[in-house]
Figure 1 (cartoon, one colour):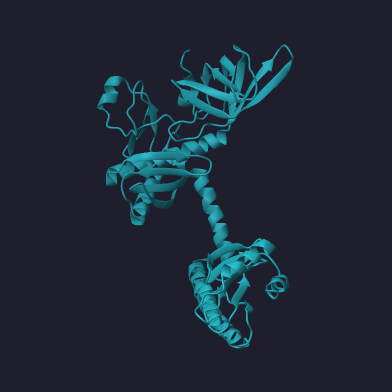
Figure 2 (cartoon, rainbow, N blue to C red; figure 1 turned 60 degrees about the vertical axis):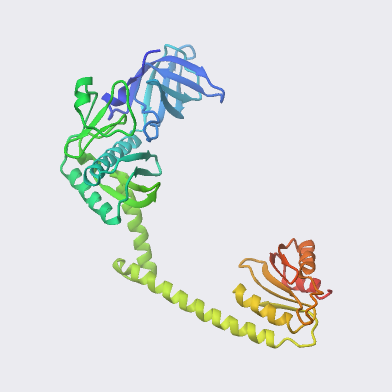
Length: 402
């Protein structure tokens, strides 16, 4: 079978095309694998997701126009395969239409990544070892460490390249010219190699469509720099996607400014103050709860065999200490329950340590709670902890009969 003519190489800005069906065969999943003599659909390749769109053909026998959505596009041995739900006869002429907005967005973002990767290589000597371009993210991986300061410098230089309106050249050099070129490539290549050149910034082997000029990228923004496999992963956006991201984040910042009743420039300070206030309140609440818990423990009658307390305190360490204190002064079991934040309780149950005989086993009480309420948890004979979903009155009605 002849190689598919890649119309996206020569006509990346086109949104429609005509071609003829070379083959169309049913696959195991019930869909059809269709091969055309030429296509505008860019396949999933080189880390970039495939184009989206439809294929239509006129069924003259039934006098109908059939339109099928292309659900996936792949390439193997330079033959491009389109996956769709309909059988289209061999020899039929089809009209293909791609989502040109997505195509152009991918072109902007891929061209922006090329400038960045070229600069990372020339300024820091690091290689691009991974690339991913989808609807949800654009990332590139590099085999060296870059700081936030480095990222700012790179971002600034990429946007300067955009403003310089540099022509982007995409072509297949002959073997002699290719051998003389110093170009970036993530893997060894054979056969015709497509070279994308951005003069002064990058020369790279690439199969994807690109914009004609750096000015069409419009805007470039680095979103994050994270450690990845000994190097870094940079998340970025270009063009309309970068603009939309800016608009959304500006909206979020404006909403935060309104809620906090401060100017946008003071949002960070206002949030920091909220955290400080929260930490102070948490500490005050913890101190108050510890006091209340201590008073509750001290108010328990000494002649009470077993103790079942419910508290507003939520610090397990404080509660464990309180249970230990109760176990030292009461001959039965001592348990403290506190809210789990929903409609149930967490608990710690201890067995008496008064006579040192360890005659009580806290697991026995825990087993009753499991059988009755489906409680979860466990521990040692002297102390268990767990959680359950039940009302206070229901729990006490069971425990008071022990």
